[in-house]
Length: 420
Image (cartoon, rainbow, N blue to C red; front, side):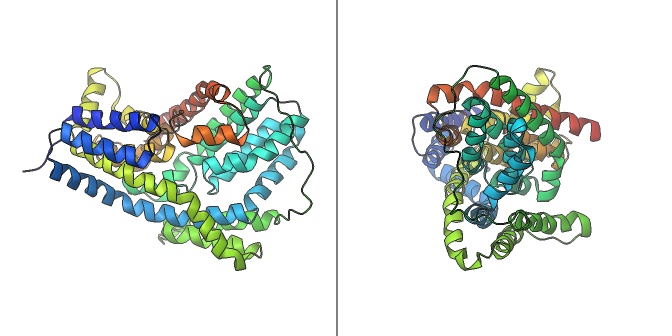
């Protein structure tokens, strides 16, 4: 007899996991504990619950493997100075008069080429704060430009969240990235407009930033910095263009190695591999935890009850995709974890509703950016630390971040509706 967990049990398990994360219990353990208790409360035996959790974790392993190898590209981009060079060039070309535009676009592009969103903000922050001090722009406007640009770039990147959604919807990574290009552009424009609005306010000023260049810091040429990510995009594009399938597990490390060669740093690859792994190991372990709770949710009737709720409210079934992304992104305070849980648990229901795999995946992914920066997640604190601001000031930015995420999500939904 097939095990069935009640919807109430799945929801209680998720609430327990969220409560534990808010209480600062390690997020992976929080998700595992929530999954265990949710399964038992939902009517499954202890043995069945554990089997469901293990099955859910197994389903996420292909994504985890690809994410682990993505650390090679990210690590090399950061350690060779390529990420900083890309940001420097964009800021230099746009100039002081377009400081906010430069900060937002540099964050967007860094994230889009494979640097993780929190690392993007940390990388761009010194440059952004320096230019903000020169142009008398307050700290909150600069931070919003970085975070908003990062959100926009994240939905068109070969980053962990995109990899997980492409796996769960079984669509090419490049197809999923391309589907959200227009929403990404809308998102960065909204981020720039909101950051400009904040820049006119009397908020926390930028002070004590060293505006001098580090003469000992040797950055690569722009071509050497960008060639690795370009190789990745070319390799991944061979599937839709020439029906030659090169898995991200291969394409991402190759792009990293090309970058190391182009910057004359191939001898340092062992160091870069270790650094890259250190940046992805946390999210990889987190995804195993998300797999356990996803297994519980998939075994419950939550998807069908969610669809019934939408129908009872006379809401279009197409909203199942973005709403699931929004809710799970907020629950986990993580784009990656939220997009992974939403796509793994709701993909079949979304496809059964007649929504295309690419469109459904793109809308789930976009939705996961809306409330993914809540205080119970690490992104909130990492970005606050990047500009040395306090909890209260960082909290005030969340409504603006929600507006950026909503602009991305609404555009993604409209794009799907008019092109289906």
